[in-house]
Image 1 (cartoon, helix red, strand yellow):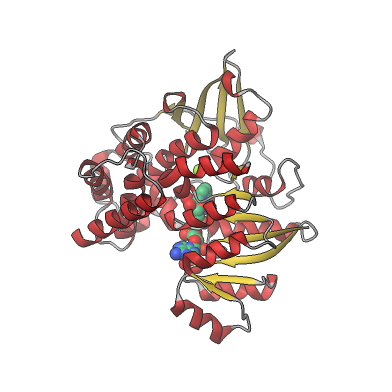
Image 2 (cartoon, rainbow, N blue to C red; image 1 turned 180 degrees about the horizontal axis):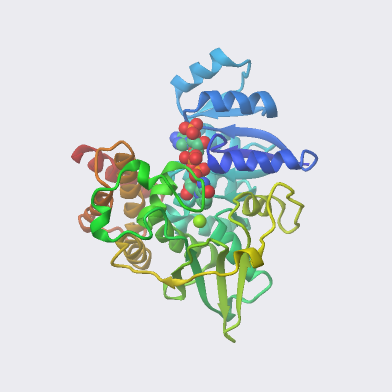
Length: 380
Ligand code: NDP
Ligand code: MG
């Protein structure tokens, strides 16, 4: 029996993690959760799974929750998430919060040698060098939850790092894959939230429409698999059936396929190196599928992908800037303060006006993250 601490329990990945746990009540116990604002959903989770530790975003939510439950161990904020991540009772940390707010918890879990299932890709984008250095130092594996990275992880199983020719990340193309740049001028929040293949949280759905999600995933792949950026390629694959691939020195390609269902990579990160049945997930019917499509990724059509390659290649503090500007811009777009195409302008401006730091430590990263957000919110 493994004790799971689930950060972001009320979100899309969080709820699907709970689905997986429901299927295997003898393997997993929910020890701790963290959530943001969704008190109603949190109450349901607490009533069903009875976690011992609950972390809330702030004091206001703590008070709301106290009125509504008899839960008495309630921790607060980033410190609360770090405390529950370090807790001796936590065996596995599933980090599924949205945004760089998850960084401290990831680093804390590494220092306490927890098994870590990482969905929170912003952690790896904003401070990949620190996270991977700590993971190496403490001998901790970061098990990817992101479907592309789970696919690569599975395709790499047992192969030698030096034999990798390239990693091929597949991209669905997001909500606007068939629109021209002209047509993107007037798109609305509702249009952008309508993803063709996956049902996900709002922020990552917008990231998929701008292609920033793929950009963040390029940086995530660089850190997780220690592969240089010129060996990480992106192609468009509209069906989201091949989740990603690795090409080896002999040109052999190993791919991982399945119906688009996040519960599969979530479960694998919880059970690795073993596999368990997942009865709620559907088998892929390739005959019914009959054809899969691939096309070239257009960097001009999707400048956010180019920004991410640039930030990743340059390294230092630039990925932190890219991520913080993107988080703020997506939030502003969701609140209808800026247009869809202004998201990329916000990010480009932030990157152009930033005073570059070559090897930022944690404090510098947190400062830059906050400064970029403040500047962006001041402007709009
Ligand atoms: P959601 O927006 O659905 O969920 C985010 C979760 O984080 C919610 O539980 C939210 O709480 C919580 N949260 C937000 N801010 C805070 C905070 N300050 N303190 C504590 N908790 C907080 O996002 P997703 O589940 O879609 O995504 C989560 C992560 O997983 C992201 O990094 C995303 O990129 C990654 N990911 C998601 C995929 C998906 O299919 N959804 C696929 C691959 C990666 P509340 O709702 O209560 O406010
Ligand atoms: Mg993904």
